[in-house]
Amino acid sequence: MTTVIGTLQSEMKGTSSTPTMSSTDYQGGLVTHIKDPWECVAIEDFLPKERWEVIKNLGQIHLEKYYEIGVTTRDYEKPELAVRNKYSWYEDEDIIPETNELFYKYDLPYREYQGKLKKIIHWAIAPPRWSYPAHCDNRARISTTILYVSPEKSDGTILHKNSSTNDGGDHEEADLPSDYTYELEWKPNKAFFHNCIPNKTWHSISNETDSPRITLNSFFVQEDLVLPNRIYSGHEITI
Image (tube, rainbow, N blue to C red; front, top):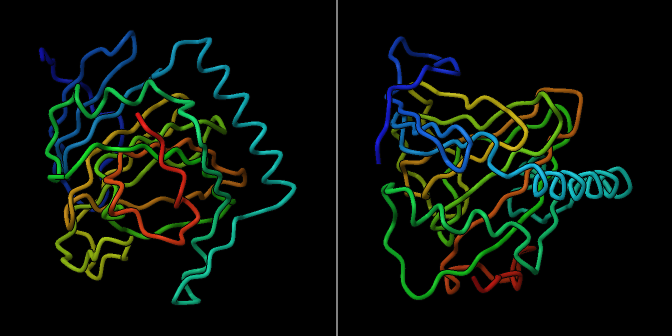
C-alpha cells in the first residue's frame, strides 16, 4: 500500500521521541497508520455522510437511554473495579458492517485464532470524569474497531508503551507504569482499529469532560473464548 509521511496530529506524553506514522486515504477519509507504541490504524470520516447520520442518530437514542437508566452495573470479583461501569448495549444485528473489512485490509500483527470469527457490537457511554486503566482486550477479541460518535470534543484512546506481562486475558490493569503514552485525537466519525496482542496492545480510556462520551465498538471474536455469563454472552453475530 502506497503511503506518504503524515504530520503528527497528537502529542506524545512522557517521551521525547516521535512515533513512526504514515497516512493514506480510505474511501475519502484520512488514514493514519501508527507504529509506535504499537501498530494500529485511525481513519477520519470513516462513514459516508448518510451512514454517519444514521449512526449518529442511533447514538442519540442511546444517550437518552443513558440519561434514563444510567450506567450498566456489572458484578466484579473485586468491588473496587465497579468504577469501570459505564452504559453498555449489545446489538444482535450487524449495524456497522463497514468495519468488517478492516481486519483483512490492513496488514497488522495479529494473534492466531481458530474457527470462523464472529462479531460483537457494543454501544458504550462513559460518564463524565470516568476512566478505565491501561489494559489489553479480552482474550476472545481478535480485533477491535472503536468508532467515536459524540460529543464534538472528548478524549481519544490512549496507547501505552508498557512492559507489563500480567495480561491474563480479561482486561487486567497493567502492573507496571508505562514508559510513555500516545493519545489519539478525538473526532466524531473517526475509527480506531487494532488487533489485540496479549501483553502488547496496552491502552486506556478516559472521559475528562463534562459530557457523556459515546462510542460504537465492534469486535471480531473467537466464539469459543467468549466468557459465559457476561453481559455480552449470546450476542455474537455471524459475519
